[in-house]
Image (cartoon, rainbow, N blue to C red; front, side, top):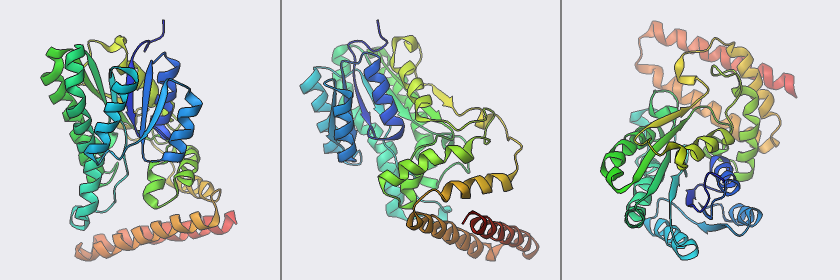
Length: 331
């Protein structure tokens, strides 16, 4: 007997990265139906065909309540039930500090990560109550625990998802419904490539290349991969975790356990070697983002004490010089 025999799941952000790996694993583990919800229509439709008759794709922008409701309705229409909802769709949001946050970007990021998860619950709970069982899983992040792991809106939304699982656990436990969060660490996916402005295809390629310079950032010396999170989602969706609710499962390779000694120069070299494997135009886009970010950081130093500002500016200058040296050497 497989772990998800007879179960039906809805997975948002299912066309790539973590959602794709999880959808594939759920089908392999006997799911009767998996609704693949995403906005990447071409890849989503192709992926559903690859997975076979137990998978169906539907265009779903999780910032739109009507899209979420249609995806849930499809699960009932085609498979007659909904047992698992994995709220996984996301975007990286913008960087920068609180005072530089664009309101529109903040609202959009919160809508995708947090409001999308809440609306998935809102429209699924009545169905699960009738069944007497159900399972919600949220893709959180180490950024929900610690500053510096993501942008403002991204980090706040992930922290909120961690607490949402606790709230839902208490509210829904009496109905046989569980809710948990997975907090990934450094996972090699395309999400941050999308934030740079890469196409979805290039972002996925960049996600794979990230493995090369992410391996030494945590206690387990390799980059996390989407399958690591898929396996965690399978555990939380299966009866093996039937007495677990309101929890957050860290899948971070020990990232939050402590700082790992490493050579920043080596890490920078690995980053730019990976960058050289992209098309020239995509390389230019990435370098432009880095330069603009550095310029903004320097502009923000004007209100800092002169002696501190000077030290920081010298460090940033050394990094810029090393970047140029690496890029010249790799050509």
